[in-house]
Figure: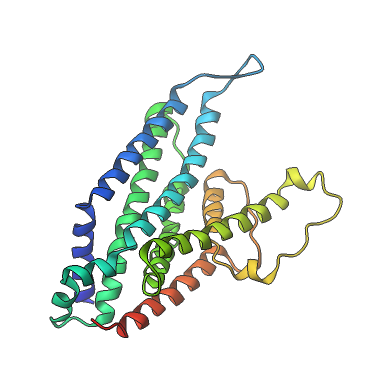
Length: 269
């Protein structure tokens, strides 16, 4: 465990020095600037003024989901070359020549990437909270940051899946495959949630059909994000199947993480 934590620390230091990480930080600053305008503007619909606090509230909920998906994308991009780069520059051999087990090395690298991406997400969500407090004087519900913390499993799942795919395909293809898995689940989860919304059901004569089996077991990253958002908004959400999205993604993460460690143990250095 001590070796794993040290390697995770080395990974964090390596990532924060990369230009891609700095570029991501700049994008986040721009995102916060755009969100700030939602709190300070005035709005009208059909000539009637709209409460800016309501607009800012909705903007905060949208930003919460957007930030969660940005963190997932950043985690995928940071994980795409984590093992191959170590093999090419010789750091993998150098570290494994010491009394470090392969599983400690592989999971330590994975944990380091996850920690940076998750901290990135928490920072942005915390900034949204501070913006709401400083510009409107209104506090977002205390569950806002708790919901942000619950989304950590999405980041860990994506990082693990990219690392696993990178053993078999090129780094770019590994990221594209992971994005494909997330996008498929996103479409499935959004369609299912929309079909069970009160607005759409008011136009439907029949009850929506039961979800297909694959939709029930597919990684529910978007459903987990929607569920976390519902903690803040208080509006219940619907997801396919009887398994809670957190449990679904957690089980998938354990499976993929175990496969990463098993596959790395068979790697030739």
